[in-house]
Length: 186
Image (cartoon, rainbow, N blue to C red; front, side):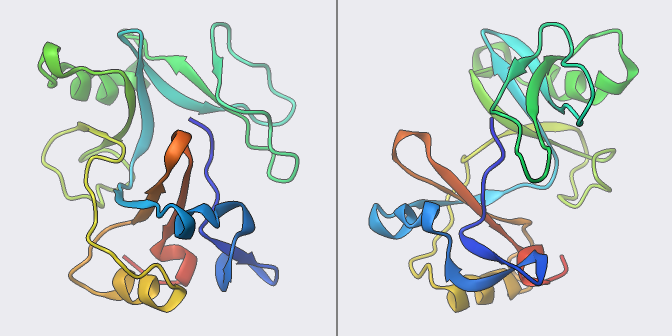
């Protein structure tokens, strides 16, 4: 799972924020249209060939771990170089991945990417009582207007206590927009 870009262009004066201009690489959201889904605040995981993986970002100058699966080429600007590495049952840092994985009934452990969320992940913004692997793209949002102001308004609404939106398109295309991109606090 590669890093995905934002729906709107980043502000050149503040790369943590967006401006009211569609990112050209994500114009497809309006043409197809894209399917808006809930973005969960956790850490990425995957089930590939029945094996549990977690995302690992190889930092500049560091070695790629043995057996890692490359998700994309290294980003020349940020240096992000995401890979999947196997979760190991005996590693304490993988404990919550396994807790969540083992809570999924075997017939429902389907191939794909997930977000690990729960009490010990990122301060638990999803307010969960247990660690869970939440399938990416599983919760569709009822948003019809994808304009800058409409999305900002949707994410500003206190009733929408979510990290953001991930748009899914044909051929596996995706892009995102988060509350933080608009300087909205969760």
